[in-house]
Length: 239
Image (cartoon, rainbow, N blue to C red):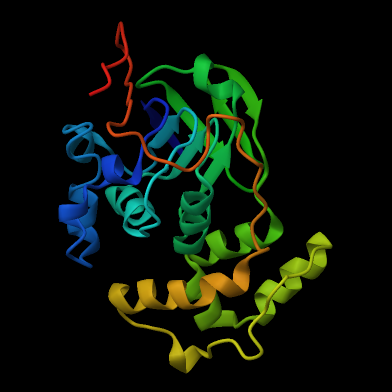
């Protein structure tokens, strides 16, 4: 599916993606409406299914709340492509089924509003007649994203699906629960899903491969997120 580019800058924190005061609900539609509500007030009204966020370095830094990727997904964003991701955000995005690809080259090659096509399975991005190769998600990450979320995967296929993906990729889990949740244990509400994801996170310490961030990209949020959209002549001043 072809979408449009929504371009953001470096150090976009989870607080910028969805401020804490909007995290008092488990209503997905409400979370989607609050996505980037302060950093980019027009975002929720302008974004359409198929659109893609293209961001700079350390996207999703700050707190570990799952609400941030949930808000992006609920707003209708098809994928997030960034130069680098905060580790916890990357993991949460995979767990809730938000397609994400790390690719440095695409950032300077696209502008706000450009047409873009993202193939998460292959890690390729096409825009403005050019093709870019991003980091292909691991087999386990793809399995989770294709199922819709980690909870959906466990609910429909159980832990065996993760084990099969691990065998295909030649990697093994550092820690696997002795008995994963069954389909009967899977939650039916978003609130239950957030709780379930938190419970299984420790057992997935080796599910997703991460690149260690470069110096200066550590998972700490600035006091004021430096968010840049296109076109813009200068970056906002730090507060």
